[in-house]
Length: 425
Ligand code: ADP
Image (cartoon, rainbow, N blue to C red; front, side, top):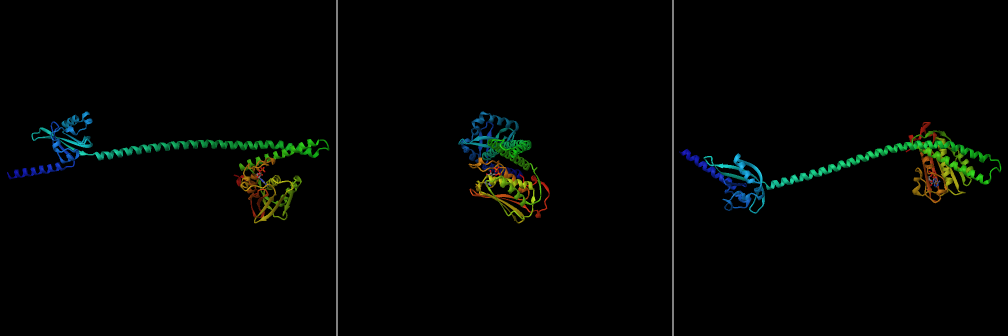
């Protein structure tokens, strides 16, 4: 008897403790009868829904179910599931507070039976997950946003990539076309130049013969003047063809150089004599052109350089002015200078005149023939022989052109080489 009384006491104690836990739980814990009418309403339910126990006990729990949920048949579904399984676990749904605020809740329902096993109602525990769900929804939204950003960037990148590939294909095609064009140009230039050279030599030879051997009074002064003019023009054309051929060879690295030790002073003196006879409108002066050591280079090319510098000095200075040629040993080189008192070159033009086809724009430019190739070719020649070519000038008062060549004693260079191997670009 004493044992029974003891177990009844401890059962009552457990019931009281359970009732206290239920009463003070933060979750809403509600008991419903078989008709869904609210029988108990704990503190958690009061705090969650804003109703006191007095306000809701005896009322149907649909009071807490939003209209839309009722319309979708949620109450019937819940009752059916409960009847079939006896419980519902953590069902996510929405409920309404007294103030009409929507809450997201997890609902757990369990059927309640009496001692005889008859169903007497059900319990409902509602856990508020509104904040958690909102945070998760935000995270999902941010993820969606990030994913769409990444997708957008990926698309942009692949488009940019495709554009780059397309550009590269275009460039490669353009490059191939340019290379082909370059080859064609070189072939064309050398073909035309070669084809022009032979007839030009014949014409020039014939004209010179005519002019030299002409028996007295066979030609009228007018005819003779025309022959002289034709001879001059043929000369210009011959030099242009030679220059174009030189440029083509320089650029393809095919300009042969025959290097050797030779007497530069002698070469200058010879050329100076010829120019004195050829151009009598200027005063040609040579200084310090004796007792100079030999230089190392290709005398034919050096002669072409001298011809170009003398021709320029003559073309770009006025009649009666002096053109002075000088050569000096400096360190391990000989430096040749060609000085005129002519029109001079503006400082801004001084380096450009060595560019291909560059001619200084000025009023009288048309009066002087030329194509802006002489200095370009001359510099390439001299550089290929291990020297330099440069200029100083005062606009209006004349120019000095310098070129240097290494002393033969100072070098042990090969006898032949191709200009393209050094200097041509
Ligand atoms: P070209 O004389 O056939 O035009 P060059 O390459 O020999 O070609 O010369 C390039 C340019 O440099 C010339 O057009 C001319 O304007 C300028 N130039 C060259 N030499 C002289 C000089 N002695 N005095 C003034 N200008 C010069």
